[in-house]
Image (cartoon, rainbow, N blue to C red; front, side, top):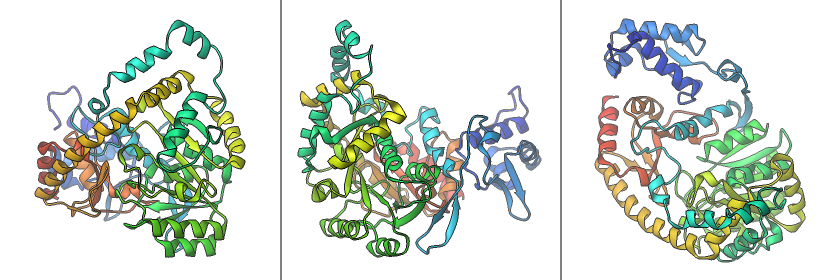
Length: 476
């Protein structure tokens, strides 16, 4: 709530609050601000105060007024107007109807910026990772101490590491993949700065600006933005319970000759769906028939059943490229990821890695290898899965008791929740209460109004959040 005792006037406080959220991308271009009357009620100020605040935002070029419609965050806002060193990109995307639309990739960073900054000290329902206290372990500091002795520091820090990544870690990863029925020798594995860089390396190696790429929708907002920023034509494929919509994929293949398909087969984000064997076989048939590669992002492998269907296991890394990392399960700050690919692709992928980051941190890779080899990571993952199962049960019960429903059966880390109201508008109100939501519009290649939101089961066990959520939702 705005405070009259502040050194700034209520108008300046309100304008400053909206300006900060716009600059931090918590209010994306095209977002409609609350009406003057709604904002006045929400903030406990007079309508004249709201009008004056909106006028300040207009003067700063952050919003625009549309006749008889209200105030909107400026569309296609050039990044240099907000961040002098930035760059805004707008590229065409194609919906399932084949009609070209405009997409602003920088919008999708809104959730990530909020995650990094932290809206408050409250558990955040929109977070994409486990809470820090879930990840605290004794073995991680021990692993770091083992590899940061004076001798180790001299051996591994005063020179560049191995181009493909630490040999010991790649051997450990090869054995780990065998447990998932993905056969990849250490020579087929390249370590990366997180799974996101692995995805980027694949894109930069296999694609050129203008190439069509199939992505699952709903899907990971940052992946849409990353591909769009590279100039790719995004072809959204609806994600069903059993896998991607095969009819849409087949049509795209015939009409656009896509070069790549990006998929989360296991515990898909945000729905939690898992690929079925029948759907997987058909996807691989399409890849062979129409000559495109598949990137399988297995980010959630550590909390998923080993027997889950994976395209890379069925394909034996012929058309497929496997990507994963350890940010979700172990240490987001370590930024250790990897990819596994066919032998004939490895050299090209490695060249791209060298051009972007030279090498990856050998010390952290060696520490991770120790965690894997000693069985510490496996036992830690088992504890996390047990804790997550309990948290999911509590979160689902709270969501249902507060009038929500699930658009997909609850599974994995995330729930795909139907709130019954516009979650973009709801997210604005929840920010005032210190909660960062992940509205459904973020998970579409072309942002659109949605009543859905993604919740993190690990951070939505607090009944207080659901009470605030229900109060604000019912007031809309």
